[in-house]
Length: 520
Picture 1 (cartoon, helix red, strand yellow):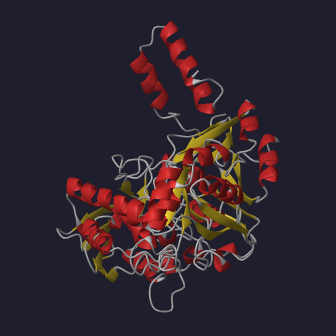
Picture 2 (cartoon, rainbow, N blue to C red):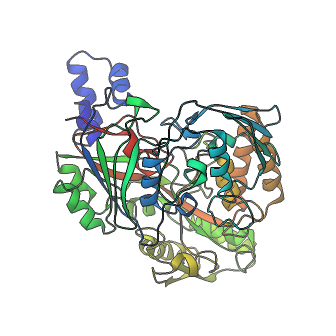
């Protein structure tokens, strides 16, 4: 019965009624539902997964990873010093321990001993330093260069001890070195796809597929990497991906089509999974461009969108309303006390009057390249805002080149964010002064002051209060409308086993290949 509930074939209410009928208390039944999905992983089999991304321009360079296909390849073959577990905690991985100085500016990493790369080389501190330096330096083109910018020095104490010196304290540093770009390679060399991961890369066709076999000397032994071999396929067309899963050609797929996912749920050979993570969709406006430079106009635009209707129509219910800041309910310091902003055309009109106008005309750029349904969302927003005297001109932009020609360029447009596992990480890359991806050009002195203070603060309560205030500042003064959090929705064959899913990225924190197994 429990599996039927988890697969969507039985309602929670029916499960609870059935449990009561056989004498199970309500609390015990509820605990059963929330307990880990499977207990004993089995070994063996050839696992195939279809991914809705991939490009022929991709490489094995971890600094160039920009979508799910290379993320899967990277995590199959390589490990990071730290991992994020399925409870959202930063836990040692290739590191045996990660210890901070009192001011969180100096971090000492003790490496596990006896960890072997696929080429037989034993991992040492030199490999770790070379892997980190791959992303550093003036000539680096790595996507993780800014992630390591706060690191001023990396030095070796001995073959298994490394010391990171930071410009300023950062209590989240263990999360930073869990970044998938920062995987560890022998001598920092990436060309052959060699790592310490559970699988050895056999073939790699960029944007097409990658094949792997199990690594016999994996340092985690039988704890992880349960399949004998795996195959990652780039199947960008969602209909083709869905057909491959329903016909048994693959065992799992990401990014289910929300318009037809109800049909997948009826298939008893499949399980559809919904995970609330950090993924969110935004509508950033340049606050240094009129009329967005008036906070009252920004407030009016935030009150003039019907978030409930957007979630119901665009996400088909696979998500929840957001509150004009990027921190999701999956984050540790999510501000649950911040009043939820609702659709209120009268309040929107009130703020327009405070801005000195009765109505405004604004252009809004959108394309489904931002996220599936972005154009529909823009049209709905136009209808909602009209009741507040706001005339939105929806400009449908080409999908091709959207991220290079529209996002960061047009004053108001739709955007997608996968989110980040920590508040500091998310705020630092997109909301802080001078951040490369500050897509609203927002600069709030109090916010930037708190960002630095919270980063170095080790007291949990004090830190929570700071992040709560920062979310409030974003919501009330910031330049982006954040209408919804979008769930990760993926599907697996019914015989695919798993534990509780991680929520820091799609597909079980992008660790599906390492964490899942066949039940039969």
